Length: 171
Picture 1: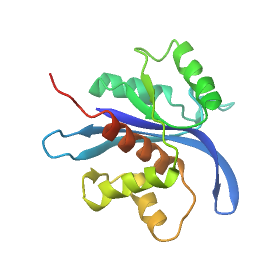
Picture 2 (picture 1 turned 60 degrees about the vertical axis):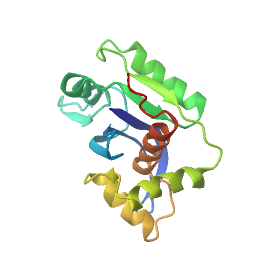
Picture 3 (picture 1 turned 180 degrees about the vertical axis):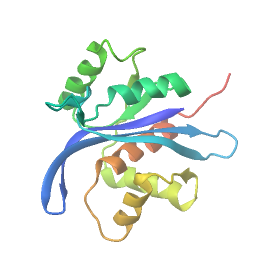
Picture 4 (picture 1 turned 120 degrees about the horizontal axis):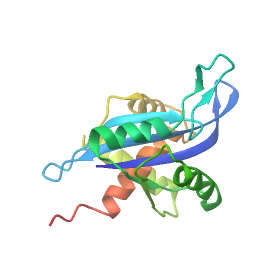
């Protein structure tokens, strides 16, 4: 089980700029080569922000990371973004008392965003990337005109590139 993470970034939605990130968790079937996305989360902050009525205004990444560990024992994520941006979010995760055990974040380096997108599309076309979650809809939008790389697609790119670069080796 591996994940892909996109730290919050500025994105244009319906003519308005917004900032959010995305994280996905998937299982990889070593026999069929299928990557099945079974959890994903759009997020803005690591720790949830409450409003004045003590209701969650922005749900953080921390509860989701705890859920992944408690249900799936999943802790590994691939990422590809600015090292300065990554450092600030990783520090927040690692300093958190709420997030136990700590996840691991592996940097996936690529020099060409189009090549990473092609790797993602290869898995879509071969039907080895299986997702019925929001990221699937975003992939369809990207195919039919959306040219902006959205956080959900970036997280999927990180996941697929990571699985290709660091395949399961067995025992």
